[in-house]
Amino acid sequence: MTTLSKLPAPLLAWYGAGHRSLPWRQEVSPYRTWVSEIMLQQTRVAAVIPYFERFMAALPTVEALAAVDEPTLLSLWQGLGYYNRARNLRLAAKKIVGFHGGQFPHTYEEIRMLPGVGDYTAGAIASIAFSLPTPAVDGNVLRVVARLTDCHDNVLAPATRRRVTEELAAVIPHDHPGDFNQALMELGATVCLPNTEPKCAECPCRGFCQGFAHGTAASLPVREKKEGRRKEEKTVFILRSGEYEAVRYRGEEGLLASLWEYPNVAGTLTESEAAAQLTAWNVTPHKWVKKAKSKHIFTHIQWIMKGVYLEVSEAAGDFHWFTAEEINTQAALPTAFRQFWDLEETQHV
Image (cartoon, rainbow, N blue to C red; front, side, top):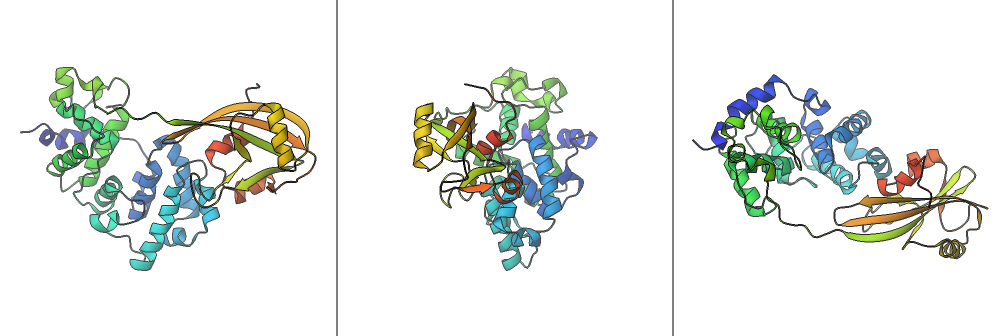
């Protein structure tokens, strides 16, 4: 008997005895499972919960999602980041309504063809919503399997992911595939933790875990070194004229496409350089209020940002001047810029 063939019974018993109560688990449907899985991509569960509940309240059906306009969609998504996930959700919803008559596709292959859906997400939806015996292999699952089998292969290699998927496909229980996949996710999220000592004393698989037996669990999985993120410096201008603030549209291509931003330029400007930039924008400063430092990390880029807060003489320049309410409802500010809007106490420089 292989190590993984011993996994289903104790794992399902552990999961059945108690697991996190999450809104997409309390009421299961293909639509809810799909939206939750897309939101959970590169985002913590605790952060997703309020967004998921708000999204479901506003767009409770795939038809509602297909019909929503993009500004409203991005406003609902604002703060979650990786905004193409939201755009792909709407594209997929339109496909479901237009090509599937509003019925969520119910085979792995059809689900996998939806915009924004990869192997893991298709496996999760197929197993949880349709009880299909399809593995759902993400980073959590790769880590758990590497520790269970004491595997030192690079988990970032596609060949490793394919092998793990095949091994799990051979042992996934056909009567409870969704619970099995969610139990693996739960184990990785609550017990077999990343970047720290796993809680082996609480693990239902400790008795046959090869990583635990050999004392290697904490050092697994093996990951190849990633290239460092490119760093970019920016000076961000928070310009206020009475109750209005200046924002501008980022355009429809590139990073944070189709979103809004505070006016900004590359580099960390001195006060005199910032004043020259304001002149170039035809904006006259009335009062320099404060400055703040911040940063924002994308997958391959890190922005090092200096925020400059100013009161200006009038709402001039080639900008949109919105009230706080209008920013909330009409301008989807991504987190990289919204943090300056939300900032109540800043580091003065």
